[in-house]
Length: 109
Image (cartoon, rainbow, N blue to C red; front, side):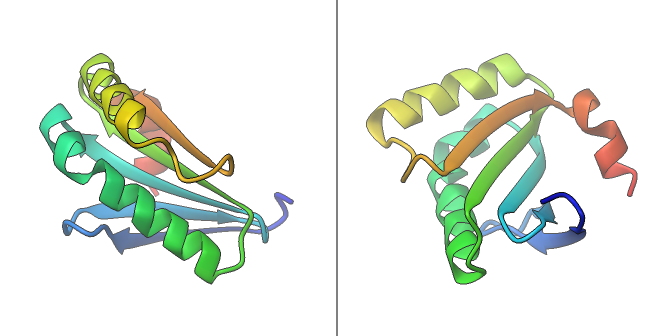
């Protein structure tokens, strides 16, 4: 599964640059860096829908949305509130909230 990892940058629906990793023929990971709680309120469902659409269009199995935040606790709290009202579309979608520092190596590429 991990023999081929493609790394690219693509715009999100709101014009942010997102790092995309396509791992093998199964997994799509989209990493959005510098996310604040206010952006999550207005954009989370769009980012998820965009990623699921790309996953399905490319016949991949799973999608992971990773939000890199300066305040991961606040972003995670807002994301959980949204997910209560609008659950993830299926069990093949996962949301992760990390500190920007945890993604430093990825952003250096």
